[in-house]
Each structure stands twice: as C-alpha cells, then as structure tokens.
Length: 212
Image (cartoon, rainbow, N blue to C red; front, top):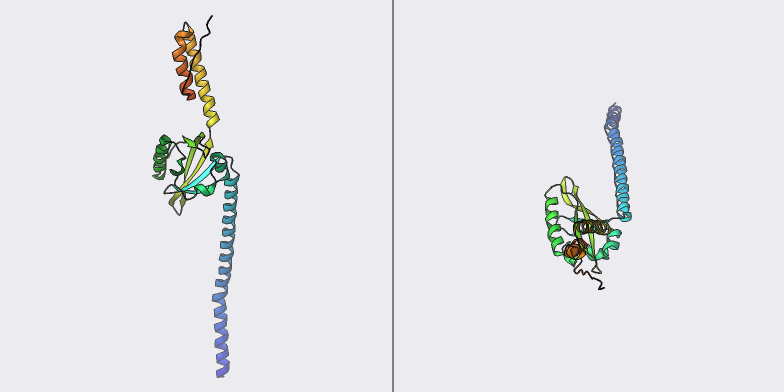
C-alpha cells in the first residue's frame, strides 16, 4: 500500500510538472524562433542598406558625433580621389578637404544638426586629392540608436557642372543687359568685364579693340 501510494504521488507530480513545464518549453521555442526570425530580417535589412550605400551614385559618408569618418562609400572615393582607409577615423577638418570658408561653414552646420535643428541642404567647396575643387551639395541626416544621436549620415551630390552652367547663364544675362543699355562698347567694357569675370570666378579679364 505504501509503494502504491508513493507511485500515485510521483505520477501526480509528473503530470503536474508536465502541465507546468511543457507549455513553458513550447513558449520558449516560439520566442526563440521569433527572435531568430527578427534577427534574420534585421540582418537582411542591414545587408540591403549596405548594398544600397555601395551602389549609390552620390557620395555618402557617415560621421560619429565627434565628426570623425565612420563610413565612406565607393562614390566618395571616386569623387574625391581619397581611398576610404585614408579617411575613416579622421576628422573631416583633416586632409585639407575643405577651403577655409567651407570648413568654417561645415563646422557650424555640423553643430546645428547635432543640436537637432532642421537644416536645408547647403553647398561646400571640396578639395580633391589632386587639388581640383568641386562644389558639393550637402544633405545631412542624423543617425539614432535607442533614442540617442549616434552620428550623422551625409549625402554629397556633385553640382559643379550645374553651378557653372548657372554662372554662365547669369553672365550671359548680365552681358545682354549691359550692352542694351550702353551706347558704345568702350562705355560698356568695365561693366562687361565685371559681369563676366565675377560669376565665372575669373582672376583676369581683358577686352581688346581692333585698330583700323
């Protein structure tokens, strides 16, 4: 009788344990499967994002909150001539990437963006490795992690040719206005040279007259 009673107690304990632990085990399996699925989806999204950055036609870089390069995509390397390993870990004020005026503007805009102010895209003159100068249209966007700002993602669009075309149109329009208001070419000459040289950033302009 004692053995029978013991077996009954153990059997009841086993049933009770099964009632408690089996659902918990199934719930653990479900949670583990869901977490794995979410992790795989996150990994897939990160790979897709990284691929988009690599294939983007525009230069894209990221900075930490101190202004150091964290990522440089291939388009940036092609645009500036600097390989990514030369830039990553360096502050954007190094390497002489920006003119003095451009550096001051970049530092100012960087601080305002980190402070959370919404800023419109702006233009900066960028000095490439071969010392040529291009005009970049800068589009900054803050990066967040768990509600905290961790850095900045910046898209740089080369607008050099667009800017030059706009400068040529302004010079052409100004030239037409000056000539229409002048009675002689000699009278219009000083204003013509200024209207042409300034928007095209020419250091010197000369007007020659043909002797007759």
